Image 1 (cartoon, rainbow over the protein chains, first blue to last red):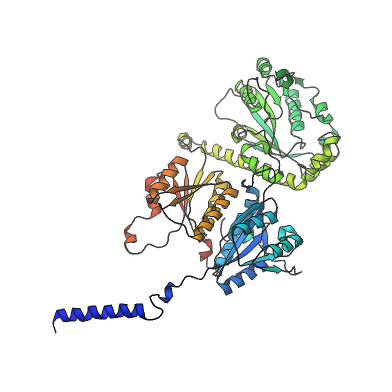
Image 2: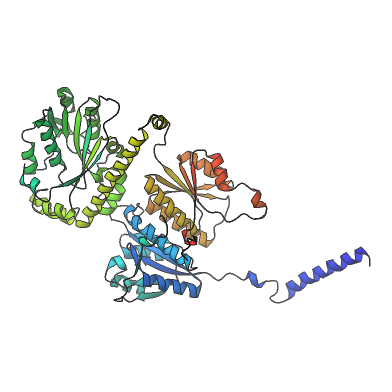
Length: 189
Length: 395
C-alpha cells in the first residue's frame, strides 16, 4: 500500500469523524458548551462585630446543596453629617476581620464567598441600596430584637414585603449563643 | 487645690515621653496634655503643673487660658502670672487672641498655652495657635499646652464617624509627633458625664444638648479608645526613634533618607478573591499608619462580564469605606503599569495575590513579584496567601 493511500485514508477518517461529530445530535453543539447555569447567590447581611453561627451554618448548608455563593454583607451606617461614601474606619475595624473569618470558614467547607459592603443612613437603608444594585436568590437573617445581632422585627417585615427573593428568617433560639467573630480568624490578620 | 483633686475621679494620666535629648538644643520643651473630650481635666492639670514649676523657682506665665466659665479652673489660675490677651478687630468685630509678641518679649521660662488646635483671628502672625506655639518654642521657651484627640487631622474621619460631629479645627498629626511629651488625661466616660451633669464642664443651659449629642457613653468610650491608642502609638514611635539613634552605626543609618510614611499598593482584579487581598492590605496599612492604594491594570479594550462588573462595584465600595484609592490603569504590560503607579504614588509596599502555577511555556517567564522587585528596588513585595487553604497540621 502506498504512503499516499495511507494518508488519504487517515484524512478521510478524520473528516468523517469531524462531520459525524457535527451532525450527530445535538447538531453543531457539544454538551460541554451549554450556557453555564447561573450561580445562585445567598445574601447573609450583618450589622455588628459578630454573626450567629446558626445563620452561617444554614447559609453553608444551602450553598452546598445549591452550589451557591455565600455573600456576607456588612450593612454600614453613615452619620447624616457625612457624605454617604465616607470612609468608615470604626465599622471596618470590626467588619473586616469578621469578613475574613466568615470567608475562611466557608472556604474550608468548599463554599465560595463573595463579600459586600453596603452603606446607608440606617441598616435598612443600606440593605435597600444593596438590593437595588444586585439580585440575590436567598437572604438569610437572624430575627433578633438586638440590632447588634441582626435586623429588627420591623426591618424583617420590610424585607419580606420588599424583596423578590426567598427570605430565610432564623427564629431566635435560647440556645443560639454561638457566634462567629473576628476572634475566629485563623492566623495573623 | 480643689476637692476634686483628692477624689477617686481624678483623671489618671499616661505619659509618652522622649528621653532627654542627646544634643543640646535651644528650642523649648513642649508637653501636650491630650484628652478624649472637653472636661476631662487637661487645663486643670496644665495649671497644676504650672504651679509646681513656679514653686520650684521657675518663671511661669499663662500665655492663654480658656476657663469656659469653670470656677475650679479659674481659681487654680490664681497665683500664676498671666499675659493679657490682645484685641484684634476683624469685620467690625473685636476678638481676643493670645498676645504672641508680648510672650516673645517677656521671654518666660515656661508658658502655659491652652487649646492648641484653636484657629486665630485673621490679621495676627499665624493662622493657627500651634504655629504660635512653634514660634514660642523656637525662642527657647518651654510650653505646656492642651489638645482634644478629635482635633488630630488623621483622626478626623474616624471621630466624625463615631460621633457624627465633624470637627473643623484640626492640627497636623506632626505637631503632636514633634512634642517632647504627651500626657494623656484619662477619665472614664461615666465619670465625665457625671462631671458634666454636676455643671463642672459646661454652664447649665448647655448640659442638656451636650448629653443628647456629643457626650454619650458610646461616643466617649470610642473617643477614649482612640485617644489611648494615639498615645500608645506615639510611645511606640518615639521608642523606635530612641533605639535607632542609640548607637553610632544606627545613628548613621538613621541619617539615611527615610520614606516620610508608608504607602501600600494592592494589585487587584475585578474578582471576589481580590477582596481578601484588599482586607489584608488595609490591615497592614493600619498597622503601618500608611495610606492604601488599590490598582487594577485593565487590559486595553477588555469587555467586562456581568460578574466582573459586580465585583468591580464591590471593590469600589470596599475602597470607599476603607478610605483607600482605587486606581484603574489601562495597559497590557502589568509590571510596567504597576511600576509606573508605584513610583507616582511613592509606594513602599506592594501586595498581590498568589498567581496560579505557571504551565507550559509560562514556566520560562520570570514571575511577576521578581519582575516588580527588579523594576522597583527598595519597595517591599508581599504575596498574600489564602489562609483558608493553610495546612497547619490541625486538620
